Amino acid sequence: LEDNQLHGQLSEDVFRALTHLEHLVLHSNHLSGYIPSVLFKNDKLWWLDLSNNNLSGEIPGEFYKSKNLEHVYLNSNDLEGGLSPKIRKLKNLRDFWIFDNYFSGKVPTSIKRLDQLESLLLHHN
Image (tube, rainbow, N blue to C red):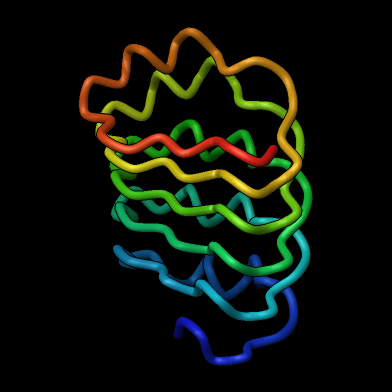
């Protein structure tokens, strides 16, 4: 559903029902609001691309419990806050793009424990 001029917020109820979702690609739309925490209760999700939208708020705490996430693209939104040291729990993470947002603070040193990480893009925050 990428680049389809979708508007509105991501619904907790919709993602609660999608228990077998493995890929979520909604980049380059006009989505707003926060990232629903229920999205990360799905242990099958391994590809998440919400880049190039108008999402705001912080990365939900549940994100750091998503052990199967490999590819995460949250760049070019209005996200803020900091990264938790709990990022070390995302052992399968290969790509983590959060550039062009409003993140602040230091990059947790625990990020060096991500042995599978191949691409980390943090610029313009």
